[in-house]
Image (cartoon, rainbow, N blue to C red):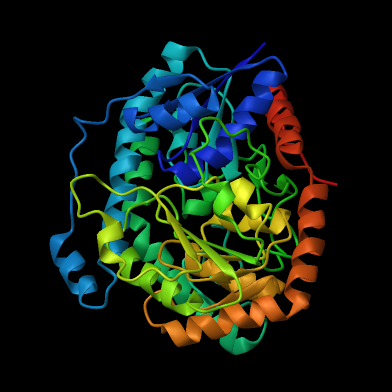
Length: 430
């Protein structure tokens, strides 16, 4: 029996996607431990996996106030906050994780692609690691737009020029994180990384996307594996209560903007309610988590249509099993879970890599996308009606769901991880 660690962001989307891989490895006889901050405790308990708590409190945050203020003029201050967060996390991981890995006596580490520094921490203590892409791939290719954009795929000269500029901005975005990683690598006698792609595992890189949904890839290495959704069949415990008796049999529109509280969500909730008012369908709107010190989001919704059911938390997988349409912020797990159940969608990407997911929703033909901030209720209603009326979206979604399921999912991911970490040799695809 081997002991593997999981290092990922403490956000629900990352924990819930990589956690099932840990569960499968436990089923195969291994010990698996989340190595993360206290923030991950609730979901780790939900997943039934132990948490080794790492304290980052003494790692200082270095904010870029003037850049944040400038970007905020264009509603993009969150990009600077996120960039500073990546730098801070790299510093914290490289300071704290090697000691934690040694204390746990780990045989290998499962590293989320968004925690680029964790592979270096594993190398510092001489243990192998694999890279899990729980979100949109960061791998750079000339024809593939950067993962933070909403651009569609194109092989023409204009698209390539646009992508080059996009990747230049991406390099600027992660230069502080890369500088931090290289500082430690130099101290530890390791070779320098030229770009973030160098941080991916040389043994195995596993993505929960699949061909047909991701843009065409021509430059991924032989150790790269598409395995489909990791979380679509996840075990659900402590399911939130839901008034199933209030579903009336009409086509079900399920709407969720995720579980991360965001002050921009309430206006979009109001748009969704207005767009579905009077439709021959029933809307279930899940509000997600909301901080107690904030004004309760229900008070910000205004009038609730007769055909709408508003809940704080929803049993997402169970509702997707019944839904005719999903309205989503285009979070990776939610989109993939819908595809695996043949549920077409209207995507309203909010931030991070959600615009890239929205582009892939359109590219793959499983739905349409609007604008999180700019779409009016009337425009959103038109998108919803188009997807409900055109069965080609559902047919394409079902076909893509079959492709994703055939990719192997969490069982295939566990096979690759086990082989790579125990043999310390690259695992190549077919």
